[in-house]
Length: 281
Picture 1 (cartoon, helix red, strand yellow):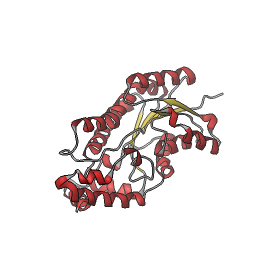
Picture 2: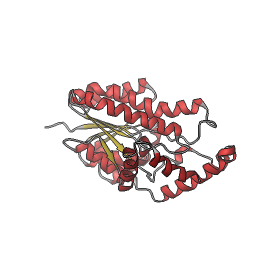
Picture 3: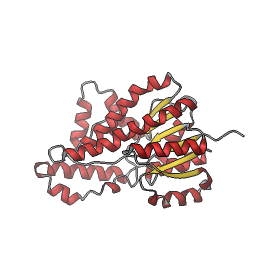
Picture 4: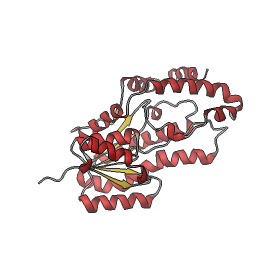
């Protein structure tokens, strides 16, 4: 019998990661659904049972900022399944603020999870992916292509991820590993809720930036009121997972494609600045 392909997905306790784990299992993959706190696996476990794929999903602990946790998880996967065919880097954390009001520790924390966590997990997985001629799929963001107000640290990390992956892609391809980045826009998930932002307190502490921050929050609320579902965002990830020749860059909606296209065609930066300045007025 042919051994099913195995995919490891980070950040699967909610949102896009959870939806991707369910969709990958439904597509026939042995799915290693990882999360920092496996005590939060109940929602995933119920969704797996409801979708009839509980036998294809295995929950494991993996904290992307802990190299020992990454290594231990991968060792278990290889010992139990003998192979790793794909890695989906999904774990991430939002960070709202502007540099005059944010501490350097807050900026470093955003970079640690959103950038260095991706680098560390990819680095550890590559020998196994190279052996399987597999692929790395990384969930970035439209914020990895378009810098957004009050998302300086988050967008910096996502820009860094995209630059890292774009640079890695031809090198990885030379040893048989495909690289794809997936760029969602607003997704109706726990991602923003997990940030724990106290909006009134943040505005009250914003000093001269308060009017711009209020305008930003109003615009962002509207965007998330019209967000796509996690399942909709997960569909292009599964497409990249199963395609014979996955593209390097994929957006998860028409809106995301149009938004990213703004920056890709904006040689002097004026189009993006005109767009995003309107968010803070």
